Length: 304
Image (cartoon, rainbow, N blue to C red; front, side, top):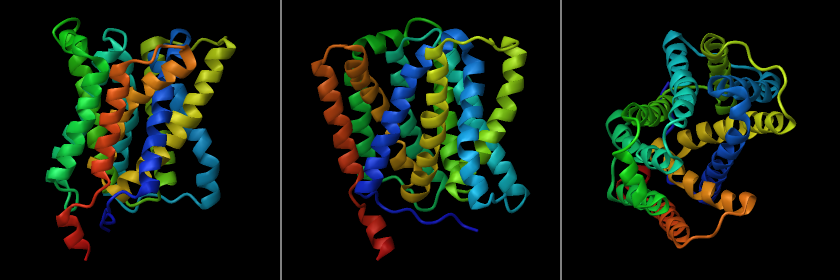
């Protein structure tokens, strides 16, 4: 069975992309609250476990569907490793060494990688001038937001941590391309992927960090519940639905919005100052989304 053909994003798609970016950006606030008490690997394991429990009742109620054959099983297991297990651990490890601005800059390479990967590994998500311009505008927004200090940071600190952050970005791209080859309803696919991720992360957390702390503060528990419900559970449903609908190269523009909304949440929740860089970055990222929403000539011809 072939994956369904993609279409140009409509207003609802763009709204859902913005919603996913806001949810993921808010997750960084929750991570900062919880990770000092849980440790990075236990944090990844617990949020994935909670996300699985959030989606399980719905998947069970709708009737859990299973992969059709061994090839589909291998794709789903590989996708779960690339979409959940590896990037969660890699980003947490990099965050102990790298500044947030450098992490944002390195993660901002994701849409470029997605553009190239989608062009060569799919039949209907090809490179176009419109897509390239939208990616360049989004990446320019990240560069403006993090400032020249981030480029200076690329030459400082741990070289290994930077490679690990790039590896995490590559993991997300590979997982996004795998999702379009999997023939399962999005919610049930997300539920199964989180189940596989939890099965891998809990033993890994015991092995690396030992037994979990039994007494967590109320803020840490609240942050964990939020991470499981929104950035892990609901956002993954949005991710899988949108990738199948509009293709991964366009969906990957969501990555560019995350640092911008992270800045906005810092202003709203932490009282951080409004900056000119932030306003310019927001304008560039939204311009990239506007360009991405247009129809490519080649795509319009294929659909007519």
